[in-house]
Amino acid sequence: MNPAPRTVAVGGEHPYAITIAPGLLHDAGALAAQVRGRHALLVSDANVAPLYAAQVREALHRARADLSIGTFVLPAGEASKTLAQFGHAIEALAALGASRDACVFALGGGVVGDLAGFAAACWMRGVDCVQLPTTLLAMVDSSVGGKTAVDIAQGKNLVGAFHPPRAVFADTATLRTLPARELRAGLAEVIKYGAIRDARFLQWLRQERESLLAGDDEALALAIAASCEHKAEIVERDPLEQGERALLNLGHTFGHAIETEQGYGSPDNDNLNHGEAVAVGMVLAARLSAALGMAGEDDAETLRALLRDYGLPTEIPAGLAPEALLARMRLDKKNLAGRLRLVLWRGIGRAEVVPDVDEAAVLAVLRAG
Image (cartoon, rainbow, N blue to C red; front, side, top):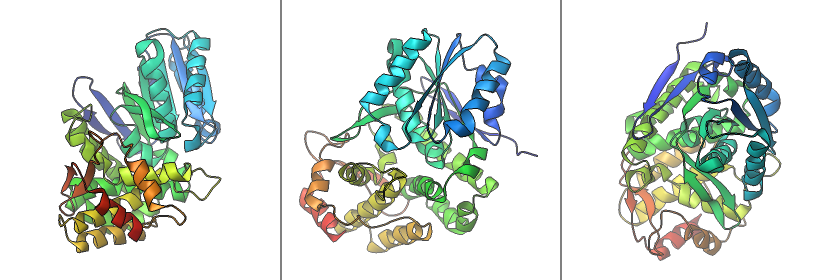
């Protein structure tokens, strides 16, 4: 017997609900209720589509026999989050004849969610998007909040739009097919919420480490719900990332620089994936905070030890030049007037946005690895 669904409400100008439970991809009524018109485009990737695309299409047709459903499948991996693939998604909407009341369903991880959401934001100046995240990383981060984007050679997520979803359905049963590495990557983002604003949650994550790493359904559902609640509270107050929402990027400026400099990770190479890069980035941010006298070294070590206990990397990969990483960081979207603006902390659970960070201090931390 499946547990009762958990629901997290995201308020603001465009409110929506995040539903968390196993079996949601089979819920024909709930999925079809999100489609206001007659056209739906299912966007997925080459790993996820063979597992779940058919059941989503079947569920939609079961509830709405009149629906015209198109499918666009992109190659798996961050390397596919490009303007070229975005263009193909737009072409799929055009081939479908999608009208302004069409709905895009994003079935997959963060890459699919970001690209499909961006296509939905741009088609006819904005159509509905429903997020169907199938990775832990997407369930707790990228599917929530309406940030959509693609990457370019100069950096991650530099081309995109804010486009809140119509709904998010986090089917936790999909996590049972998730590779262990991808589960750990998602847990890095879960740990982030404790690091930025909830020391008690971080302690719970320390206690529940074995259950979470083993993929325990109840533990994962609790972690997802808590993470989404934290993000929802922040997104409601700052939907366009003009202030507080930037706190959600703890470790991301460092992490994005690593991902970009490596050429983006994929299952076919040893480059860090997004969650792994964020884990390293959080440690670097904590060490920089200590170097600037904002927090103690012991807090940085506590975070590093927890990430290592979760099987996550905590050091910059070999072969990346500190100067090159700093150059990548200068392109971060949070920067103002050409000056570094980073998310640092005053200790566990007390993150803050720090403007005009001294580049020499950043470079010293990068050189230390």
